[in-house]
Image (cartoon, rainbow, N blue to C red; front, side):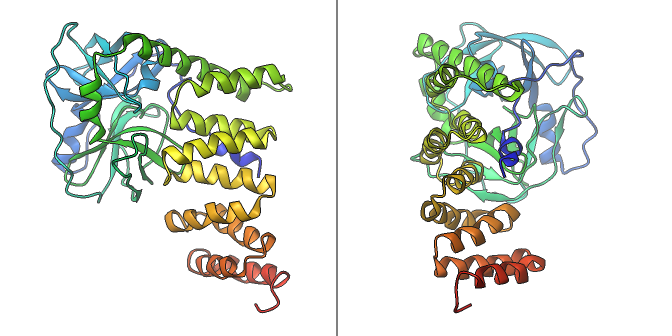
Length: 369
């Protein structure tokens, strides 16, 4: 199961290198309200990073802080294919959002985002590395929507998550902007809900140095995580302490996930659980965070705590094969017959071929089954 940490490591734009700058746009087979977004999302480039940004009109765009890191200038390629410079407008909001402007001394107008009609027909619109273009990705389903009181909680869906879409648009079937895509695992996508944007706008222009310091932490944390993934040798305690200290400064939910997964992959379970628990506190309905935490707790043999996490996951993604398998195991090892019955029901509904095997396994632990 350690290999699953590598599967969970979020695809991100942080480390992408491209030799050829991509072209924009593609023929769009969807409804006009959806297709219009192909021209409202642009490509962002900062050094070797290529990602996406969403136009808010009046030469203003929004993307992720983890895309721009500590840069105050980026390049954007608009719908016409033109490559232009854009200014990064610092803010001190905790959300992973930042505004870009084609004008240096822009007075940002108030932008009121209407509440969406619903979360049906969710699609991502962003840069696709396979085609080298802004594209509309296949439809996905909502997993959970966040409470407005949690500033780093995200919209979670089954919309495809690929490198390059960070900063792109999450829209519904009506063509309404629901959120700004940011990260996730290969199976589950995360987007920052659009209602946070008004708060980010209100905080824009403040605390430039704080923004740069946090951006530097983004960059350094990403570089350290990249080194972990590439290194084939055992890393020193000093390295892991540096990773912990640096990544803590980012105060970023997705990076906390990645750090927790990195610690877990080398068996540093207490540190893994600590970072993943922080992530869950910031975003309690994140399948990526909860799955990683459940895995770490299983290796820690903290089965009673693992059951609590898996109960939540069964409410969110009970068709996930790993969730089902861990639920059966945790029920047995924690001797929790009530949860065992719940896990069996979920197994029968979502993976009936494995039901008999799961039942036989549980009968070794519960005489009444």
